[in-house]
Length: 599
Ligand SMILES: Nc1nc2c(ncn2[C@@H]2O[C@H](COP(=O)(O)OP(=O)(O)OP(=O)(O)O)[C@@H](O)[C@H]2O)c(=O)[nH]1
Image: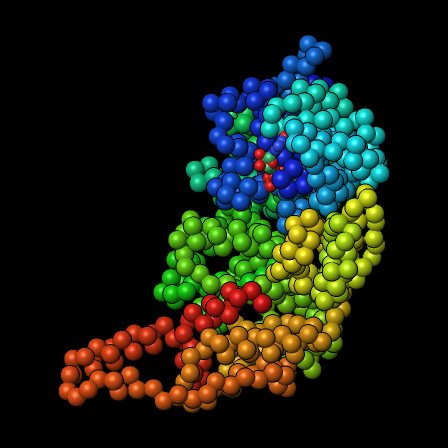
């Protein structure tokens, strides 16, 4: 298909505004898939995605559409993941397009994520086509959404296409708008191969499959290619298009979106955002926008049963082969035994990996409290990165600790501003800006430490706004903080699994909370057990568990020796599941209870 008849576009939307449903309607209308073929929602392929009803990975698809002008166009739709953990992938997918449909729910209006996504699309200079979806809803309020489009997004209301993905209304209008308003791709004059990798998957049979947009030149089987950010050269084994299934093609040319399979063995060999070029006729420089993906959230993952360590290691390796953003290395903990320190893009990514370990590999795991990565300047001038609180140097050796900061956008009905501001302040955040969105809602822009929004911020926001508040965030660099390491000692022994890096002013409250929690779950011992929270040797909170004299055989009267033996056996077995911290035996599930209790 000639480049003038190709249109590459993406769909951006706030969660649940109907992106997947609309994509399916576009595929149906262009007869790319028949209704019979259509599973519930075709583009959300992973089981996990379907269950949670969110899109995690992007799945491109090519459609052919005979427009009202009688010409058939090739429309390549790049679906984008709808979660901030994957915003780099979203930005790379958008960079592979010339236009984007911006979906706004006709009843809900513009949301925080709509704006964050629009921001990414504008950075790529895309033609934006607003689609007001769900006009079938009785609560649909077109004048309100039109006003928001004009006031907030600065797009004339008449440019918006009204639609109902559910009832198939406005689908042809959307396709016509794509053909007319999204410009065709433009090829670089030197015609050297430049293909941008916007995603990759790992297929057990074929190895790494890279999703590419060819910006200039062409690529076909047998050609030797290289990437800019990994050292090897590769021979192309297969190229093809998504129809939506992967379909082999003779070649991919400028403007095309498709896939490339080379002889790559692990997902780490191709980095998202990298440029593929011909090995002999190399383009002088890579396409702009490449970033090395850095894990932002870290947590220890341990087998509940220590004999599962090797199996867990194998599972981790397999997961990493198809998810290059997931990192891991072995570590050991006094409390939890042998396990792994893992890095994730964000909390959702962390949950996905944990779920996959449980489901696909049937692993029974426990994970430690998530931590962010800290930049530490030592007094000797050395700079180090710390992703595990246990690795933080002694306080005397530290000159400064900097923590990652994010900028959050919170959209909320005006009534809740007071509560939200209190939450933001509690979490050490600062208000940057307040903007009125419409007669009921405002948008707050704040900066806040990433560690403070990791666990329960979104849940709290949702509950204090009765579900009406929405938020999104972007990374905003590092900032020095009054941070200290807090350790927990049980009977005088430090228990590494509970070490955390906390704000100095919050340390006491948190220490008291953790000590009280531990008191609840650690069983009485034969002696008094002290639970202490301390900072650099100074105790800031303390609880103690009183002693208990326990004789399991006491209840057995007289000489029934077999019964006595049975009880002792049982007690021995019980001990096997205990972790000895110094003299104290703590059941493994105590750790699980405290670590799972959320805070
Ligand atoms: N009434 C009505 N409901 C719709 C329409 N389009 C989508 N929905 C419903 O809205 C919900 C969310 O739709 P999805 O298509 O899954 O939303 P999404 O934007 O893909 O969500 P993510 O994948 O999480 O980003 C589903 O329950 C759909 O059935 C519409 O035009 N009208």
